[in-house]
Image (cartoon, rainbow, N blue to C red; front, top):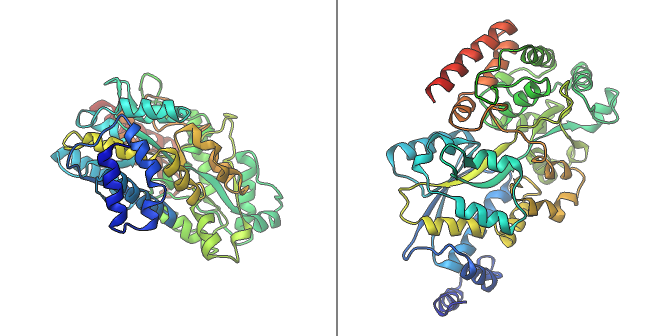
Length: 438
C-alpha cells in the first residue's frame, strides 16, 4: 500500500467508518493500488442504476460502494430509477452532455450514442483476463463493431426461468415441467381449468414482456432481421409463434396487456396465477415473506419449440461512462472494484443469484448449487441470444427493443385480435422504418 493510501486508511478507520465499510479494507486498498486505473485527484462520482427487485441487491451494492470510498477516498452518489426510466434518462444525458458519470443501463442502449461514451476497451479486457473471460452475449452487447471498441463494461443479466407452482402443476397432470412448448401449452390449459391461469406480460415491461415474446419467437425459428440487417420478421415461422401465443393467451389471467415488470411478481405471490417467466425475485421474496407458498415454487429452464434450441432473452445490463465526466479513471476503477472477486462474490451470493455476472469466473460461486431452485439461473447466459437476432447488435436493434416492436406484435395478435398476417406486416413496417433511420 502506498504511504498516502495507508495514512488515508488509518485516518478513515480512526474516524469511525462503520464496520461493514471497513471490513477487509487493507486488502481491497492493496488491490486498488495494483489496479491500472488511478482515480483523478479530487474525483467524485455519480452513478445511475436500476432499482433491484430484491433488497440485498441495492443494500450490498451500497455497502460495497462505501468500501470503495473508504479505500480510495472517492465519494460515489448512487441514484436508482425504475427499469423503464433508465433508458430515457441515459438518452437525455447523451443528448445534453450532462448527468451521471456512470449509468448502468439495458441491453444495447450504448450503441445508440457510442460517440458520447468513453472507450472501455482497457477495462473490459483487463477484467476479462482476470476473471475467466465473458459469455458471448457480453461482447454482443458491449463491443461496437462499427466503432471497433468496447463502449460499455458488461455487468450481467437478471436471468429468466419459468416460475410455477409444483402442486398445481402436479394436479394438472405434470409431475415434471414439460420440456417442449406443446407440453407447456397443455399444462397452461390444465392450470386454467383448475382456476390457476398463467400470466405473461403483453404490456411495455422492459424485462418480462421482451423476454417471453422473444423466447417464443425464436423457439419457432422466427427472427427480427437477417445477418445483413434486412428485415425478416414477416415469415411463416413468426406466424407459427404468434398462433402459439394466441393459444397461450387464452389460458392467461386477465389484464396482462397492462402488465409492467412488477405485475407478474405481484400476481404470482398473491396466488392469482400459477405460471410465468421471471428472474429469481419471486422465489427470493417468497422465501423471506411468503412461507406458505415458498416451498411450492419451482423454476424450469424455458421449454424449447420447433427450432429445438434453447432460446432465451435476458435483461442484459452494462455500465458506460460519458465523455463529459471529469473523472473517467475514477469511474473505471469503481467498476473494476465493484466487479472484483471480493465485492462481486458477496453481491451475487447475497442476492441468491438475482444477477448472473457476465464474467465466467462467477459461475463457480457456491451459491448457484446451494439450492436447486437457484441453479437454473447460473446457466442463463450459456444459450442467451441478443435482441435483434439474427441481425447485428447495434443502434437499430436497440431502438426496436426500446420501442417494443416485437412485444406490440404479439399484443396485436393476442389482445387486439389483429390477424396474424396484419400483425406481422405492421411490425415489418415499423422495423423497416427504424432500421432505415438508424
